[in-house]
Image (cartoon, rainbow, N blue to C red; front, side):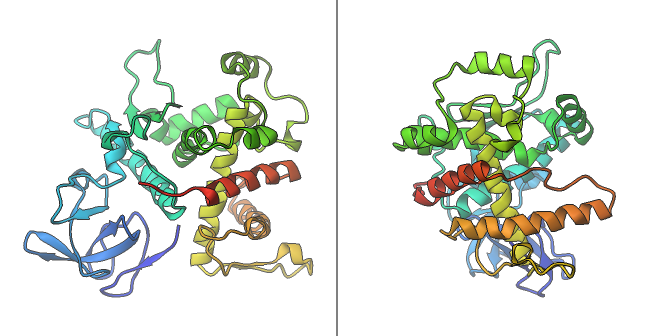
Length: 352
């Protein structure tokens, strides 16, 4: 995620900001350009300092759940991110409303990344038969909890995942090193793009050569995974234990980490991060980010930058007494799977 600056006063801004803390300007993100802009009120709308256009806030801004903009002269009420919602929880409940707002932050980060990558985003709300849509649901029956998952374009998320205590409880119970809202979003969208770019994109044979045969019975694989766990030595060929369950999950987990890597490198580039340890003259430990991770066609650039950066990030976390920020190993087979995702993404053409 790149950094932004206030066009009115030059203050450093972050993606989630809706008000400049220095000059008090209202802020909004222009979806078409992905620019966070300072705004000036004008005739019931907002004049954007970034492009001089007239804009209105997305309707969900009134609920504190969005800072994106829609054209002032158009019919759109919701921004491109919020238009993907099919179901949201009962926000008359203040607890559920708070959880939903956290989910929307993660979803906007996801949509931002998809747009930076220029991936197609067909929307069910706009008529695409198997287009993308989100259901954010709360448990109502203890015997039948809402399951987070993907089904033919529809991504369902249990809003309990937005509760940090509940999410941590589930992480520990399942023995996971990592569990976040954004991670859920990136994983489930990986299933969506398997449909879009692999199944419907003529890449089935190429994908099977890397991830295996997805026609294996999924329910049997799921049952086996939760009964016996990941096979011994799984770390050599998979990014996570869950990835060993089925080729679909291996693809979605690898897709998730590709987005992790690209977006974190983008943040590091925005901060001008350079890694050059004083105690080593090994060139593999040096990185100076001078390229756009979202646009580069050179996959090796991404990995060559990511490996030393992830070591530095983990070391910083340990200095604060925190777990490793990136507790995963990129072995040669995993890197080749990431390479496949990169080539798939770079070959995609955005149509919506």
